[in-house]
Image (cartoon, rainbow, N blue to C red; front, side):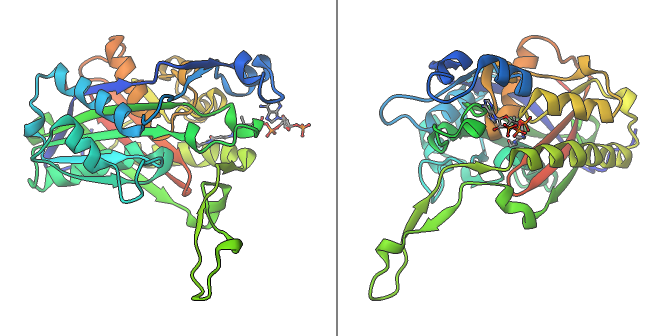
Length: 335
Ligand code: UT7
């Protein structure tokens, strides 16, 4: 096995958080024309968590997930050098990472948001690794957190059944080449297809002023489900294979396939195309639905908590979604 990374980085600990409010498919079928059977058969989703309560935001979930991760390794938040918050549902368009920094008391850390929808956590791992490889920083907190329930059209049955809210965090630390756990990555974007899945900004004609100033607002989520499905099933296996080939790792040596939790049928189709046994798939979307940037770290944290992942395991992580953006990171579990 050959690693393309010259200096080491590894994930030390993970944490996660979901809201308490659980909405099952039967409850959804009371607000839109759908059924538990349709949702389970077409997506594998049974229930999802939804953030409610006044003044609750993505930062609350992100901070709980982060503190859980820090607690596991008894790390003082002051030891964190950088926070990357992957989210597409910030509570401030200027960014929410700084609020997360303040909330967890990581006063020595610089903090910024990373917007890449459901690929956000994969891009965060890769971005963090660059800072660690160059020796700039030692400890980086990466968080994938989304509350897409705030942006869903709750009268659109083709999208409102899919999404849930949540957050997952990981602490990535610089280490020697020998202990390196982030083996390699492969990333892609196809901006020509941005409108297949978006939360678009739209100008409000009524607010045109004499000065020709346009002011608008963001719409709800719109998605061409069929196209996104086809995109995921065709492009994700190619990205995974490119990444594994560059590392000279055979698919049969992969212990776990951890894909963005969008649809059980997508997970199975990707595993099938790679000839990876479906029992190597990490899946928790029946409980949480599609939590966007949170889905991968949430599933990773659960798999670690359940002792599914063992030291030395090879984990293929792949994200895909709006942008369109997709990519893979291959990890060797070191802890
Ligand atoms: O994180 C971003 C990544 N997003 C994704 O990966 C989403 C990818 N796409 C999908 O997962 C699937 O395309 C969906 C789950 C969104 C839809 O499943 P599908 O098998 O592609 O269904 P469809 O869109 O082809 O719709 C089939 C039928 C349609 O009715 P007609 O035209 O055949 O009469 C829809 O109107 O199902 C209908 N339909 C529903 N029926 C009951 C669509 N949504 C629902 C619903 N309940 N919730």
